[in-house]
Amino acid sequence: MRHAPAEAGAVRAAAARARAREGRVFASASPEETEAIGARLAGGLVDGDVVSVVGELGAGKTRFVRGVLIGLGAAGGGQSPTFVVERVYEGRLLAHHIDLYRLDGARQLAEVGIPDRFSDGGVFLVEWGDRAAGLLPAERIDVAIEDLGGTARRIRIEAPIDRIGSLAERGGRERRGAGRGEDG
Image 1 (tube, rainbow, N blue to C red):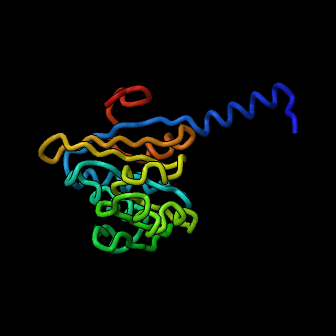
Image 2: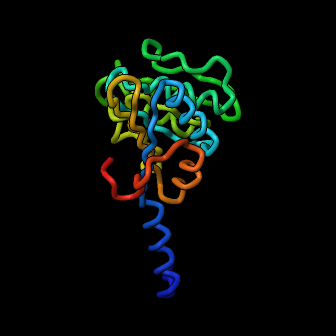
Protein backbone atom coordinates (compact mmCIF):
# COMPACT_ATOMS: atom_id res chain seq x y z
CA MET A 1 0.00 0.00 0.00
CA ARG A 2 1.48 3.34 -1.04
CA HIS A 3 0.87 6.46 1.00
CA ALA A 4 0.46 9.95 -0.41
CA PRO A 5 3.56 12.10 0.36
CA ALA A 6 1.87 14.01 3.21
CA GLU A 7 0.46 10.80 4.67
CA ALA A 8 3.82 9.04 4.37
CA GLY A 9 5.47 11.93 6.22
CA ALA A 10 2.92 11.66 9.01
CA VAL A 11 3.53 7.89 9.26
CA ARG A 12 7.32 8.45 9.49
CA ALA A 13 6.85 11.18 12.11
CA ALA A 14 4.62 8.91 14.21
CA ALA A 15 7.19 6.11 14.00
CA ALA A 16 9.99 8.50 15.04
CA ARG A 17 7.94 9.69 18.05
CA ALA A 18 7.38 6.08 19.07
CA ARG A 19 11.16 5.49 19.10
CA ALA A 20 12.10 8.83 20.65
CA ARG A 21 12.80 8.73 24.37
CA GLU A 22 13.15 11.42 26.96
CA GLY A 23 14.34 11.38 30.54
CA ARG A 24 13.59 13.24 33.73
CA VAL A 25 15.77 13.32 36.85
CA PHE A 26 14.40 13.41 40.39
CA ALA A 27 16.18 14.03 43.69
CA SER A 28 15.51 11.87 46.73
CA ALA A 29 16.89 12.69 50.15
CA SER A 30 15.62 9.56 51.91
CA PRO A 31 14.36 6.01 51.37
CA GLU A 32 10.84 7.32 52.02
CA GLU A 33 11.20 9.89 49.22
CA THR A 34 12.53 7.17 46.88
CA GLU A 35 9.44 5.13 47.70
CA ALA A 36 7.18 8.16 47.18
CA ILE A 37 8.65 8.79 43.72
CA GLY A 38 7.89 5.16 42.85
CA ALA A 39 4.33 5.52 44.20
CA ARG A 40 3.70 8.59 42.08
CA LEU A 41 5.12 6.90 38.98
CA ALA A 42 2.54 4.13 39.48
CA GLY A 43 -0.24 6.60 38.68
CA GLY A 44 0.94 6.81 35.08
CA LEU A 45 1.45 3.08 34.49
CA VAL A 46 -0.87 1.13 32.22
CA ASP A 47 -1.43 -2.56 31.53
CA GLY A 48 1.52 -3.99 29.63
CA ASP A 49 4.14 -1.53 30.92
CA VAL A 50 7.60 -2.94 31.60
CA VAL A 51 9.71 -0.93 34.05
CA SER A 52 13.43 -1.75 34.20
CA VAL A 53 15.00 -0.60 37.49
CA VAL A 54 18.80 -0.50 37.68
CA GLY A 55 21.38 0.68 40.19
CA GLU A 56 24.21 -0.64 42.30
CA LEU A 57 23.55 -3.09 45.11
CA GLY A 58 21.88 -1.11 47.92
CA ALA A 59 20.94 1.86 45.72
CA GLY A 60 17.23 1.57 46.53
CA LYS A 61 15.77 -0.49 43.67
CA THR A 62 13.54 -2.59 45.92
CA ARG A 63 12.46 0.50 47.88
CA PHE A 64 11.50 2.23 44.61
CA VAL A 65 9.56 -0.86 43.45
CA ARG A 66 7.83 -1.02 46.85
CA GLY A 67 6.66 2.54 46.20
CA VAL A 68 5.31 1.58 42.78
CA LEU A 69 3.45 -1.34 44.35
CA ILE A 70 1.98 0.96 47.02
CA GLY A 71 0.92 3.36 44.28
CA LEU A 72 -0.79 0.49 42.48
CA GLY A 73 -2.65 -0.46 45.67
CA ALA A 74 -0.90 -3.81 45.98
CA ALA A 75 -1.18 -4.85 49.62
CA GLY A 76 1.95 -6.25 51.24
CA GLY A 77 4.09 -5.48 48.22
CA GLY A 78 7.77 -4.86 48.03
CA GLN A 79 9.52 -7.87 49.48
CA SER A 80 12.53 -8.55 47.28
CA PRO A 81 11.98 -11.63 45.10
CA THR A 82 15.74 -12.30 44.80
CA PHE A 83 15.51 -15.94 45.84
CA VAL A 84 12.21 -16.74 44.08
CA VAL A 85 12.85 -14.45 41.05
CA GLU A 86 9.22 -13.24 40.88
CA ARG A 87 6.39 -12.19 43.15
CA VAL A 88 2.95 -11.23 41.83
CA TYR A 89 0.73 -8.65 43.51
CA GLU A 90 -2.88 -7.60 42.89
CA GLY A 91 -3.82 -3.95 42.88
CA ARG A 92 -5.18 -1.45 40.36
CA LEU A 93 -3.10 -3.47 37.89
CA LEU A 94 -1.60 -6.92 38.32
CA ALA A 95 2.06 -6.32 39.20
CA HIS A 96 4.89 -8.76 38.49
CA HIS A 97 7.98 -7.90 40.59
CA ILE A 98 10.93 -9.68 38.97
CA ASP A 99 14.48 -9.64 40.32
CA LEU A 100 17.19 -10.75 37.88
CA TYR A 101 20.11 -10.37 40.32
CA ARG A 102 20.85 -14.09 40.54
CA LEU A 103 20.25 -14.81 36.85
CA ASP A 104 22.98 -14.68 34.27
CA GLY A 105 22.77 -15.37 30.57
CA ALA A 106 20.05 -15.79 27.99
CA ARG A 107 19.40 -19.44 28.89
CA GLN A 108 18.52 -18.66 32.52
CA LEU A 109 16.41 -15.70 31.46
CA ALA A 110 14.53 -17.90 29.00
CA GLU A 111 13.93 -20.46 31.77
CA VAL A 112 11.98 -17.86 33.76
CA GLY A 113 10.10 -16.73 30.67
CA ILE A 114 11.92 -13.51 29.78
CA PRO A 115 10.82 -12.03 27.34
CA ASP A 116 7.72 -14.18 26.69
CA ARG A 117 6.19 -13.22 30.06
CA PHE A 118 5.63 -9.62 29.01
CA SER A 119 2.52 -10.57 27.06
CA ASP A 120 0.85 -12.05 30.18
CA GLY A 121 -0.81 -8.77 31.17
CA GLY A 122 -0.19 -6.47 34.08
CA VAL A 123 2.81 -4.31 34.89
CA PHE A 124 6.33 -5.78 35.05
CA LEU A 125 8.78 -4.25 37.52
CA VAL A 126 12.18 -5.70 36.65
CA GLU A 127 15.05 -5.14 39.10
CA TRP A 128 18.49 -5.51 37.51
CA GLY A 129 16.80 -5.06 34.12
CA ASP A 130 20.18 -4.31 32.55
CA ARG A 131 20.89 -8.06 32.78
CA ALA A 132 18.13 -8.61 30.20
CA ALA A 133 18.48 -5.37 28.24
CA GLY A 134 18.32 -7.03 24.83
CA LEU A 135 15.25 -9.02 25.84
CA LEU A 136 13.16 -6.19 27.28
CA PRO A 137 10.67 -4.39 25.03
CA ALA A 138 11.91 -1.19 23.37
CA GLU A 139 8.87 0.68 24.72
CA ARG A 140 9.87 0.03 28.33
CA ILE A 141 10.30 2.60 31.08
CA ASP A 142 13.88 2.75 32.41
CA VAL A 143 14.61 3.82 35.97
CA ALA A 144 18.23 4.32 37.02
CA ILE A 145 18.97 4.97 40.69
CA GLU A 146 22.30 6.49 41.64
CA ASP A 147 23.58 6.46 45.22
CA LEU A 148 24.92 9.94 46.02
CA GLY A 149 26.06 9.00 49.52
CA GLY A 150 24.11 8.67 52.73
CA THR A 151 20.43 8.46 51.86
CA ALA A 152 20.57 10.82 48.86
CA ARG A 153 19.67 9.37 45.47
CA ARG A 154 19.39 10.63 41.91
CA ILE A 155 16.56 8.84 40.08
CA ARG A 156 16.41 9.10 36.31
CA ILE A 157 13.22 7.96 34.60
CA GLU A 158 13.40 7.52 30.83
CA ALA A 159 10.43 6.57 28.68
CA PRO A 160 9.03 6.99 25.20
CA ILE A 161 8.56 10.71 24.61
CA ASP A 162 4.79 10.36 24.30
CA ARG A 163 4.65 8.86 27.83
CA ILE A 164 7.27 10.79 29.82
CA GLY A 165 5.06 13.79 30.52
CA SER A 166 2.31 11.80 32.24
CA LEU A 167 4.87 9.69 34.12
CA ALA A 168 7.10 12.59 35.17
CA GLU A 169 4.32 14.85 36.42
CA ARG A 170 3.40 12.11 38.86
CA GLY A 171 7.03 11.30 39.67
CA GLY A 172 7.96 13.73 42.38
CA ARG A 173 10.39 16.59 42.89
CA GLU A 174 12.10 17.07 39.55
CA ARG A 175 15.51 18.69 39.42
CA ARG A 176 15.71 21.89 37.39
CA GLY A 177 17.24 21.44 33.95
CA ALA A 178 16.87 17.69 34.13
CA GLY A 179 15.03 17.24 30.87
CA ARG A 180 16.16 15.99 27.50
CA GLY A 181 19.84 16.08 26.77
CA GLU A 182 21.14 16.44 30.31
CA ASP A 183 23.58 13.80 31.42
CA GLY A 184 22.57 13.96 34.99
